Amino acid sequence: MTKKPFRVGMIGYGFMGRAHTNAYKQVGQFFPSDFQVILKAACARDAAKAQVFADQWGYESIETDWRKLIARPDIDAVDICVPNNLHAEMAIVAAAAGKMILCEKPLAMNAAEGRTMVAAVEAAKVANMVWYNYRRIPAVSLAKKLIDEGRLGKVFHYRAKFLQDWTINAELPQGGQGLWRLDAAAAGAGVSGDLLAHCIDTALWFNGSLSSVCAMTEVFVKERQHALTGKMEQITIDDACTFFGKFANGSLANFESTRYARGHKAQYTLEINGENMSIAWDLHDLHRLQIFDYKDESKIRGWKSIHVTDNSPDHPYMANWWVPGLAIGYDSSFTHQVADFLQGLSTGKPASPTFRDALETQLVLDAVLESAKTHQWKDVAKA
Ligand code: SOE
Image (cartoon, rainbow, N blue to C red):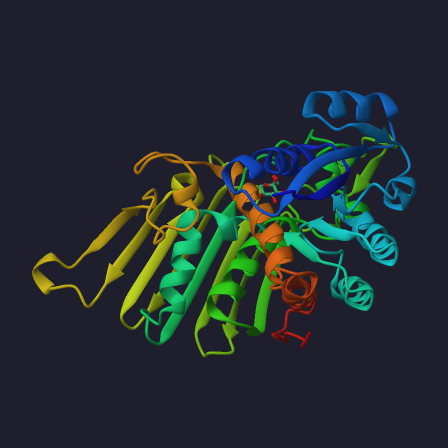
């Protein structure tokens, strides 16, 4: 069967540029589809850096102007892997050019910007998706399956945290590669947009809408040297953000994120407690799902740890990998996301989260930051 080309134009070459490209390279082997992914062009302002990236990862060509990349007739899909302040403009131009768009998370700097992006992709009717990759860790996808099967009964609590420790050093500058995450002008928000966004995305997927939130944020290092200007500049993003809230289904939410939890590198944990079952997951042990099922016979009832590596269809995505018991990793979640995106193109049922789905996360984030600023509960606006 002749496959349809899916010609990718990648904008950006950092950590996420590599993670997404790795997924494009793997997907055809592990998840065959109607499409042949072709790494057509990599784009970065610095031609030398773009060329090194293109050579290392197998892109056929480079561009240094993202508008030229988007305009190229041999590009079908644009992957936006640049700091958050550039997402909206690039996505809107790509939509107008009729290109499919795969955008790194968070969708936008804020919900207002997110709305313009949703309007653009929906008006242009182009396929779109946001890279909230943790949904596609098999253990997390299995948790979603169990929740959708109604096994939990009434849900009472949802709690999640995402802890890191890489910004404790006050000498660390802000701005530039990787460190743009500390610069409000480039990132929009701190740990809320960078880390809590993942937790919120999964929570909304598992447990439905959040209706109201009450938050606090803190900036522990008030000034950092800006890598681009060399000057000491104020830090206005949140270094830490904690919030609680209420879901529309009546359950209570409890979230925490920080880059100041010494010893934790990327500890994303989540737990959901229902009347019949509780489910917990930890990114540091990513192929295990912890389950407590109250329906178990009392003498053997207790928390069980499921190694989500079986190749039966019950363990999402695993049938396409190795033999039972052999684990896959963080990188595979991106491969699964591309696989689902391509499948969505064939079936006409778009892979989530679409820009519209991701806008809901953005609305929660806006309410969280507003609540922290005003020291008041805030309702989450409707999409
Ligand atoms: C920040 O350190 C970061 O790389 C986030 O930007 C990613 O979204 C998260 O998955 C891991 O941590």
